[in-house]
Structures are given as structure tokens and as C-alpha cells.
Image (cartoon, rainbow, N blue to C red; front, side):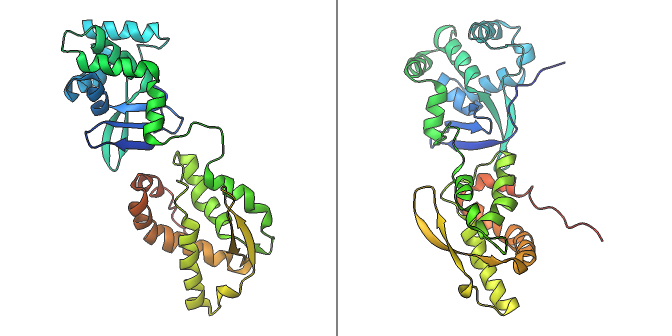
Length: 281
């Protein structure tokens, strides 16, 4: 049975630069180049890389594939595995090639290929001083640490401040949005604060539909990971059912597309999978 590399099917970071150099990081921390990105560093055309990785199980028995297989094996890899996995970014399918395989292919183009190898040699030497993994992490802004993502850290800092008689916007947004996105492989960027977006909409809904003024709700000290402290509302638990219905039927169904589309379109594929239909009566 043909083995598949153990990459999740979704990237959490994907970056395409002006010259077409594409790279990213999968949700397990595996850095990759797309076929276009690998062709760029190897100084070859994209079709050469596409042919190689798409048909690797046959190509690895040909002279070029045999040379690359030896490099992969020498570096501790398994050349019998596929060299890529298909990912979708903004509806477009890409070939995600893990950094370790990229370096093996780059080494082949730099030192063993019969084609003009000046570009490949220069890039191989440049990457000898910093690993391709570090290069991709730096260019995409990915931080490979064991620290909690910023919004989960914010949740942990504030959850004990919420009495059982009330709920907070962050607690509910974490339960219904941030944590499910994290589980699916998408980490919400720190600069995005959907609890503020939904909080404003829900407060307006309460004024219009319940005839109450949320400005009169009690407040608590809401702490951010950078040390900032702001005043945030405590919502009476009697409105929790209203909130959850509003979040799913208004914010998630009608507002989330524009919210994420304007700020981080990569999230859209994840968000679309969060909306669960109401159970039938």
C-alpha cells in the first residue's frame, strides 16, 4: 500500500511573495514550499517539479529520482513516501512539499543536475547557514514554541474572573470559535479580536430586542497577554441562550465571512466548517 506523508491537509500559514515564491507551515509545524516555490529556489520551471512530485512512485526509479532518493535516504528520510500533499488555499490547490524533501531536491539541482545550476547552488549555500525550516518560519512569521496561542492565553488569564451568574464574551467566543478553529488547525492571529466584533453586535441586539442597556452591566478587569487591562462587560446568564443563538445565526452565518475575508482570508475555509445545523424537532 502506498504510504502518505503525515501532514495535515490544511496550512496555518501560507505566504505567496511578489515573485511567486510560495511557502507555508502546516498545523503540526511542518514547513513546506509549494511546487512554484521549490522551482524558484532550484532555478527550474514549475512543470519539472510538478512532474517529479506528482509521479514520484514511478519517477524515483528513474535516474533523477534515484539520485534524489539517495539524498533523502542519506538524510534519514524514507524515499518510498510521496513527496507532497495537496492543500487548498483560498480555493486553489497547491502541492505542499515538506522542507526536508525540498532540501534533497535542491541539493540534486545544485550538484547533480545537468541543467544550469548556478541559482540552485547559490540558494543551497545560503540555506547551509540557516535551515530551510528556519527560513520559512521567519518569512511566514510562524513561531514554533510551546506557548499557548495568544487568544487561549488571554482566555486562561481571565476565565476565573467570571462569576457563575454571568458570562463573558471571550469565554463564549473561545468555546464556540477560537478553540474549534485551533482544533481544526487554524490559530487565530493576535490582531484579530472577534469577541469585540460580536460583543458590539450583540449589545445592539439586546437594545433592539430586549429593551435593555448593556452599558449598565457590571464590568471586570480584562487582561491581555501584553499586560494591557481594559474594562469588559459581564453579561447576565439569563441572556446566554440569546447570545448563542445570535452568535451562530447572525455573527457566524452572516458576519464572519466579511470579518475574516477582510483580515485573514485563510480562515474562511475553517470557519465554513463550524456552522452546525440546528437539530430537527
